[in-house]
Figure 1 (cartoon, rainbow, N blue to C red):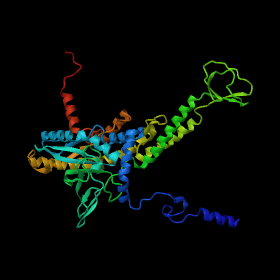
Figure 2: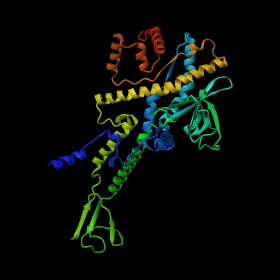
Figure 3: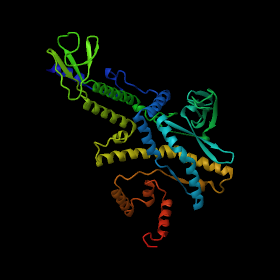
Figure 4: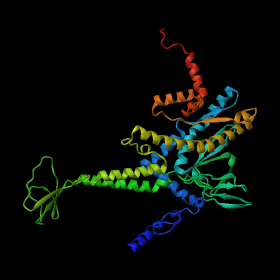
Length: 439
């Protein structure tokens, strides 16, 4: 007994940190010894596969579009802090017009490709326009030492203080007609915006958000296609006739085309056939095991949804097993993550630096005059969320305002509205004559 106990102790003993251990259980496991370089090496292949999944597979399309809608929604609003109301309204309208037409494309590129590049261009009349740059047009193959601590890494130039100084852009996007490869244009960092989610410190280029699930999506798609073809094939096979004597020719009572020693026959609804002795008919049974296979695919769907930060219901559109409480919990968690990415990516990396650069260009062109601090002060309102339970949620907001736990501005901003616009609309409604009065 003591010998058995000692043997079991050796088998089940664990020492140290298992994730850093060895043994056959870790054979073949992937490791990231240098994530900065490995993300650069994987970026191109992951981007190409994610692009193919986006245009060819339902889930690839759904992931990109669901996250685009979450980040952009009906659009962002700019709320300048300039003391003059007329100036505030003009700045807001001009900026939102410039940005709104590009937001969806930027979000799709961010999610599908892992990064989005926006170039700020100045027209001859001093107005500003934006151009969304394909990710591969910022030359990913360009890396070299510039001396004195400056360097170019995958098309991004850093100065000696590790600050991004410029981007090296190919004159034409790879694959474009008449594209000239190898010729790049150096664009100062002040005229370029690079939006991506930094996974590791020191990361230079973004990685597609579909990266964790691309392989599983491919396997899942192939499994689904295989199941479909199996069921289509099984549905074509009604039955099989066996001649137990093994004699030539077809069985009596069945007419068909003779093919060698076999007869291809068909069954008609309501037909009665007489089989000779030593003849047997076996009918096919399509659909066996289908329920288990469908449940297996649902398990794969849950893993894919977890890998891209969506709920199972948001990924598949399947609400069959959802109830109000579980759906609300999952939705709240998703919204917390979406709000984090809205603020850290869309606002911090795109809207705010663009606003500052836009105001500088406006000032240089003479379009605006006065203190720059008045013009640069701004607040951005993210797109709001639709109510899940309108009556209860509105009552909760009203109670929070009355208790001093929230302000009206916070509640209105949470719905994706500008409180100044809302108050103006309410005042305008109050000035209207009673619609119920007979004329």
